Length: 85
Image (cartoon, rainbow, N blue to C red):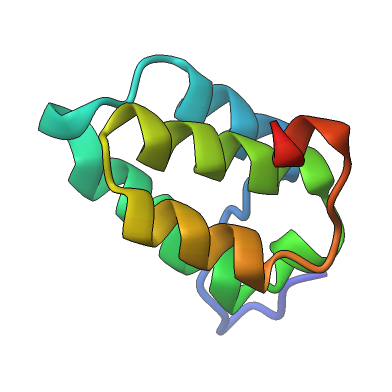
């Protein structure tokens, strides 16, 4: 519950973030994807949701940013068949 003097801050859940990333972030919208990635890391969501990590991998891969793709893969503690592919 927010105190009366606190500003309300909406924090999207992982399903919302995955949906945003999947809706077509390509190189021309990369700044949006990178901002989401920064927020994901700040909230430590990569530790809890393999789908979010896999979607970040897909985004950076579609933008041909293999170094960033590798970094996300290495930072992700949760890996499955989808993330390896």
